Length: 248
Image (cartoon, rainbow, N blue to C red; front, side, top):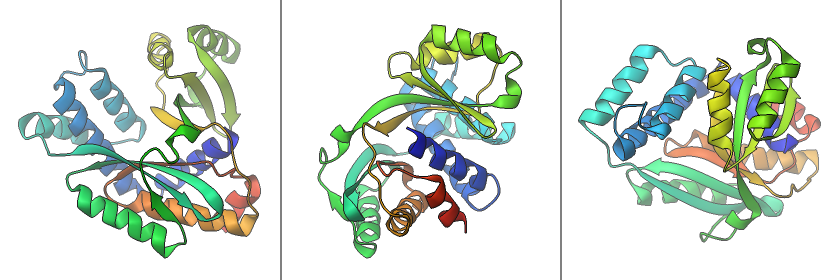
């Protein structure tokens, strides 16, 4: 999963520094909204809301903003719906998109336009979903880990499948079933992750040359900028060379 997590790390660093920050906050507010609508405004009894709030804190969203989002969702819930889309970028790269939208016609039109403009195509549901598996991905800044050896033992015992140090972060991968248990173990250890979420991880990655890979990532970026899109997953192997080309 190195390609996926490397690109996620780069996005996170950039997002804290530029206009992506407002998009990140908007996505977090939407997640809070739908979590409140599904399970109520009390995070103690609503695991999805508790996770959404934790991720908002991890993204440095001000406490007042979080409270306003919860209160607004409780008082006046939106018409947001969870909708997924599937498609292919050039060279057969599979793309899976998760959205929260109050207008599916608008969202699917925007997504189709992005694919068409950049040489990809929107496909029917089920076309690429089978190429991905649901995994828990938890990002912990290394500075929050005081005893590395003990921390790793506790997390592995809780059900972590993989630990991968990337720059300033430890990326913890769990199965769908052990995601909650590992998060609870982090709480017990008083270690707050920067982000914890269920992601769709490709079972196999596809390699392209740098030029073609950059073209695919430009599509991914454009999809992510859409206001209705929450997450975009793909099976492109993102190498260090590709990342340097994207940043250059």
